[in-house]
Length: 578
Ligand code: BGC
Image 1: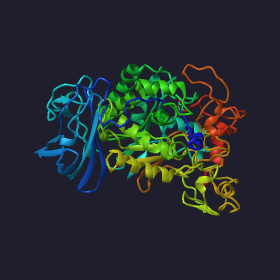
Image 2: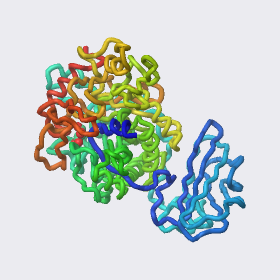
Image 3: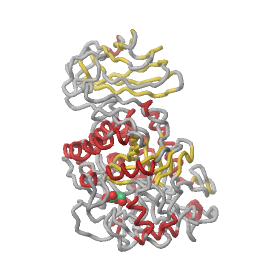
Image 4: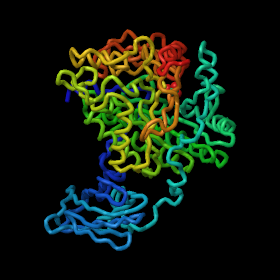
């Protein structure tokens, strides 16, 4: 445990961080402490025509000597057999009643049962459960019929069929003219200045444009021009959660840990209002949702050895989970919006102890504040991080003299050695957790190229597992927990659609040339702190195994143009620039 914890860490990739909630991560819907009962409904296995599900009911009310749980399906699911409850179905309405051996349910007690069912089309998790007539997973409970329509009629239902499976397929991607101008002004920069990059909405003021720069409408108007008569994806990063960047300092944000209402009203609502303008309905709007935040709740809160007080706060107040849920719900209500939730990267979430819990907290957020899995197009990994896309010289199953590469210092018992294998597996884990089988993954390849003269030409020597891995790995970082302006890094794969199974696109979500963090303290009004992981003289901490930071010197604040980094990325690009 301590071994994996040390490395895991946190390599928080980057930039951001937000926090999340302490909610029971297994609730199918956001349960609150005051709910009379909570129901965890989990689809365990799903195939074309059927599925199995596990249901756990917790009674927070008075003790019961018998119980009956009811729900209704939105689709044509039909329960065919059950265990540990007597299950009957009439039309879409299902009743699960106790068996004689599990009839008593004390206050705070739980009971679990399972069943198999058939279905076709989509297999949505039921929206409402009632235990003996009382609605579960809802503050205070209530006595509604589970077949009642959703309680908030102002929330338009999301129609997943209005979206294409992969928004990048057959589409051009928006070139941000502001980034493009920076890139083109650099010597050699015109080789990449026509590449698409993400537009970061990293503060409330960014919606209207900071210092005379382009705001959201200006970008969308320009996107309409670039679109012409074809399809166009325009990429935004939604990045302003309360208490943002709780495990690092470089991208702390403007909103304090409790400012959830400001996040909703001053940030998400205005963004949603603009994106919903019918004028933009022909664009495919991709949103990266809140980099680093939910992963931070898994590794850097809850009493782990990498916990930080700020992440503990965000886990306790639940404002990361609520904020992400709110953003998904509001933005997901717009039928041409595609939301991709940030899921860290393999050198952070790849360990078993982090992998499944991260999928669960993402699922929890996708069911918080009115959101559903239909508001989620997929996940993005490696945002602003440096993890290699594919380590060709070894894989997770390689051994050297009978020792697994997992035992090497570099891999450190991780289950993954690169981003592509991680992204594909994590996408599947999400589907197992309850997301739609059609979700996709994006991989940020803006700084994970690792070309240049130091790139190994073949596998390392087989003298030891460390020599083998260190000699063969493309990722030349001093430690995989290093994340800031890495020396030796290069541009990765150029942005492209459908590059591999399960992957919707390689993207440059964090624009190359924009700093990951300042190398020294710099006064600013953005809430950004000084994280010593961006200081090349720093000798490290538990998050990077007490190694040097590997950062380039003289970096400006995160997000500011950093010419030396841009040049480094071009110099070490892989594939190389021609
Ligand atoms: C910063 C943001 C910036 C983004 C893109 C992040 O590290 O915190 O302010 O917009 O990078 O450069």
